[in-house]
Length: 494
Image 1 (cartoon, rainbow, N blue to C red):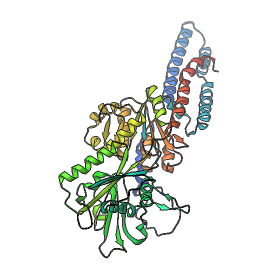
Image 2 (tube, rainbow, N blue to C red):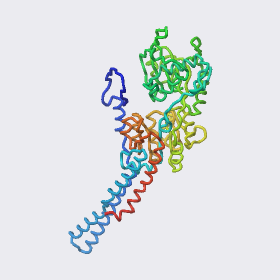
Image 3 (cartoon, rainbow, N blue to C red):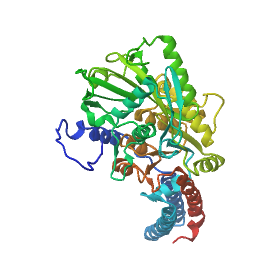
Image 4 (tube, rainbow, N blue to C red):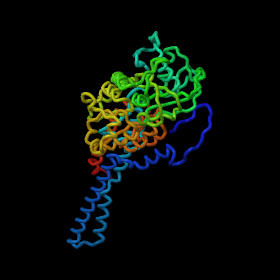
């Protein structure tokens, strides 16, 4: 998926080539997406058609008058050609190109790199901006602040770790440690995916040892946007049990659907009945409503591949240990940028894979226009249950989309476009590329964006900051007068 090997060594086995690879699938999706023409391109085409019709009409009338006046055909031909040449404003392309180029230069000074000249003016015509949450609206700097187990909820920070550690809390931290791909660099800092780093940092808070050196990892199922969990399985050298153990972390729904028991201690794993499951979900929803991301933990006996099915109950029977809740603070200046965009009557939409309550809380913190309750939020499951017509009718009043997959992003963009909106879409991953290309304006991140996303985008934000979109839109709105400017100056253009 576009990753690069930074260090180490290993063996690679080719399992697919060409269109059968993940890159191939994404490329095929991009090929199927028709590239949208900008408002300037559309208006210039219409202007050219109108000029042609008017010119030929006038030429026809003049030739007809000449025929009645019995003038020579050569004279009429000369007059007609002269009018045709005079009707074409040769200076218009030059004026338009120079104006757009100046806009590109000004935008580059404000940390927005424009790849296509017409995109500058298109930014000024945008009526809907769809944005990822993590890393764009928020800092993508996760910090675990709460750990929940069935028998307790522990709130802490780096300076005030809890004194007493229950077996269930220790087990929850252990699962997060073993089911983790971040690592410590030469400066003693944990680096990697933000969620993994936050979970691994908890070890230092509690003074726990990193047990991965004692864990022989045999199988890994990486996190995916569809399944919404990651699982590893192997054997612990410190354990007398020779059986293969599986450790799993992911969304609260994905994890609980695969659990039949819950953990209190090594000697106590009661059955996870409907009452306990409901209590866990209610607590997760309560914590998520404070804007925290909830990552649940479970373990069991078997291989990680036994649990690959995303359907409820897929695989074996796991034991729920608890969940860790982490805070990802909003980026500085984003709330002000959203307020200014909304004052300009631009509908700002947040799209995230987080839980509904987390998404709504962050949206309210950022100042997105929200109706009471969850009326302004739809989940991926809601989208799957709607017809295309139903979704198109409802999408205009939605400001938050939660628990969505990459395929849902294209559905969201398509629905807005069918309602006559001009859509800008932000994204940084390989799976975002089709949606970036589908939108009138695709906006990729300069630092965190993959090469595929940057290639599909029209604009690249150098600092990965949503607030940079505001000056870019302001420049676009100034240049959106280019159409009126061109029409009014046409009589002066050679």
